[in-house]
Length: 178
Image 1 (cartoon, rainbow, N blue to C red):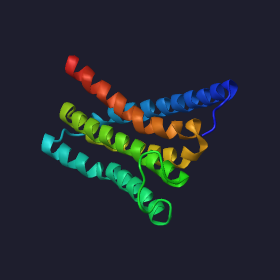
Image 2 (tube, rainbow, N blue to C red; image 1 turned 90 degrees about the horizontal axis):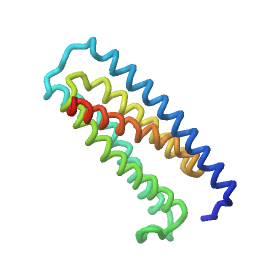
Image 3 (cartoon, rainbow, N blue to C red; image 1 turned 180 degrees about the horizontal axis):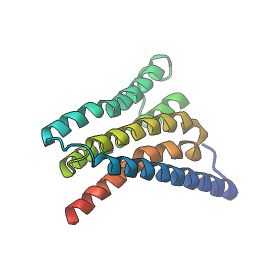
Image 4 (cartoon, one colour; image 1 turned 180 degrees about the vertical axis):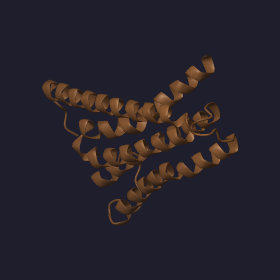
């Protein structure tokens, strides 16, 4: 890994900040639009909301399975990696795939927990969680595709995956306090 000069570091930071800011604007617009529109729909019983959200979360878990499969694929076709490796070792492809897997695991755990808290907190939650899952999927795709381009290449996708959960948790916290 090359060390960046001070100017390169600042440029990378600016790129990350812009990408994450743009993603935040998109996420807020999507979630606010869905939340405002969803109040016209009938209220579902908790068990029906939970069932719907568990089905939607299948798409979140598919991203985790794809990331696991990607690491396995790289290991299978690499004489250097087929026997496994300790953390931080292995080919560049396996290290990158493992980093994507690690981040995807973290985001998956956060997303599913957040979805469960939202479904327990808000009567109108299925459309919102469906939108959050769509943002998650688009974010994972962009994170994965942009990973090789460095921090600013993966920042928008990371933020599209992360910010819906942060906003969802903050909304639940506000609902509990109010």
